[in-house]
Length: 164
Image (cartoon, rainbow, N blue to C red; front, side, top):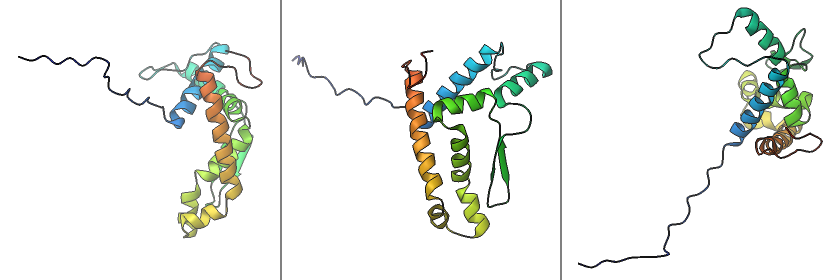
């Protein structure tokens, strides 16, 4: 019987799993919104929980803002999309994207290019060609958000922001 022993021959390390950039931004958004709610003495409901109607109303107002929406985008399809600038979600977007109104406008337009193409009976390429500024803004602001989100989740201070 032979015994073969290989010492020092190890397999290459498996590649590091890199989280999807959308997941990183979502995780940072959740952390920021939970921190904002906590600062108001509120807790976001967890899956399977049923808060009282009054508690749900307070959380919803704190999270999404109150009163008339301050931002709106009129889409070529005829729809109007609106949002607030005064809730915890808006504050998280401002922190991550650095320009919540700009992000809202760019993301609504870019996320509705396909419906615009369908509505106008055009190809997506034709519609994209009409929106280079919005696409560039979307990409620039999203890259900024990913950088801010990564720093936040790694507990690194970001430009102009105090450490958590």
